[in-house]
Image (cartoon, rainbow, N blue to C red; front, side, top):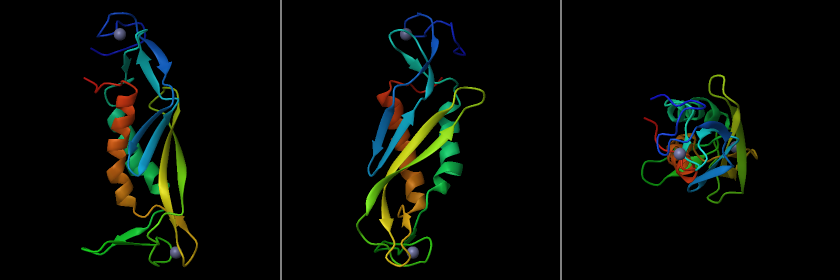
Length: 161
Ligand SMILES: [Zn+2]
Ligand SMILES: [Zn+2]
């Protein structure tokens, strides 16, 4: 059954309303994801639901295919002994992160209210050119799905369907 405003909650039958989640975080070390203003359907309990079955996959794709690519990142090198090179000048990045930074993306699913996804990660400052960056783009893409699932679970959002 397709969920909608005013329809009965599948768990308790009380009517669903459009709501905004309180800020919700998910940690997949060393990444933290924060959903801000994420729209859901909720009953009074509250039992919470995605606005559509496709929302979680859409969100993951939007982040991995678009938003994560905007975060400056280094390049992983070496098969056995891994090191990371600056994505700008190619110098080897320091082993320790300089600080933790948050990159914010504004998204909206179809005509529903917009929300923000904050991705907080350690950044490494290149000794050669000073560029601050995540150490690896593919590493971000690998951490994100689990971080998102942790955030959904923290909010009591169930898998759709
Ligand atoms: Zn309910
Ligand atoms: Zn550099």
